Image (cartoon, rainbow, N blue to C red; front, side):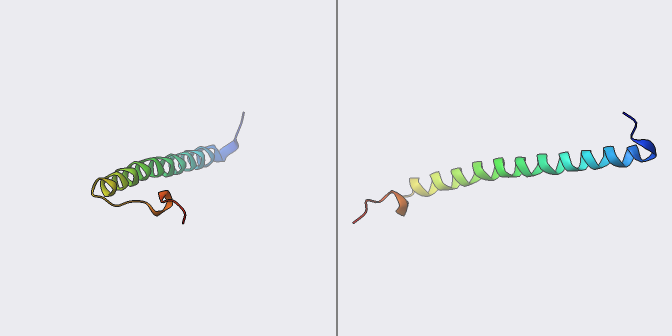
Length: 56
């Protein structure tokens, strides 16, 4: 596979896209964990979710 004289740019572009996507996935995973910890802390302090209450 010959990418021509601009092969370095093509590979650099692929690396940049991969790094960006990996960073976004890591951000989502870490934020989900943080939100779950925060929700657990709130529930331990007595806060309840409205979505779990019985309908009138």
